Length: 209
Image 1 (cartoon, rainbow, N blue to C red):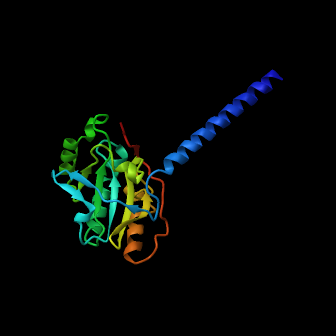
Image 2: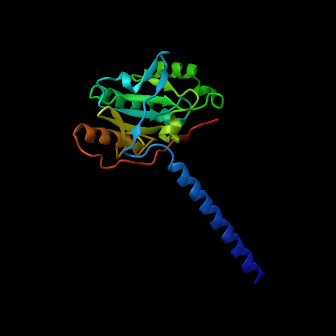
Image 3: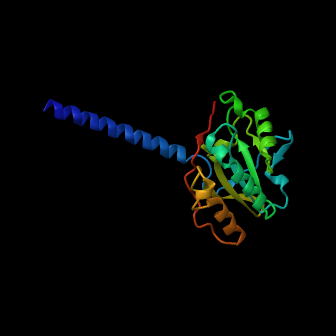
């Protein structure tokens, strides 16, 4: 009888902990932008030492905003694919805007100076911005690197149309089955609604203060 009561108590405790964790996850997921929200503009320093805003892209139809960084192996695995996205869609009105959200005090390899080195090494064709003070990524609700937010310009406002991963295989670009970002942007360019508006971002957790 005592043994049964002990296991019952353990079960109740584990159930309670599970409910708390679920509530925490739900709270985290509820932060930041949702599909259809209006994303505010920002002004962040690019690796060329110039300040950049979304509004600087006068002819853009929208933006592929990607939170990424230097040190994360997931982010590194996607660098060439991010370059390819910008090369394919920038001229079509959807440039890539990359933002490093990490705190360099915690991750020195994600410092602004290190960003400049990495951008030059990889030949980034897109802006690579530093979220100084980590003020922008919480607004978006980014939690991973990489984490993508596709914005569509509509009547002067930036509407969130897609949130999630770049594709379904971070390990090998040749084994990708679903190119989420490419499909979403192609649908927007064709004047269609995005069929899959959210996916699960896979990557390193953002390092905050």
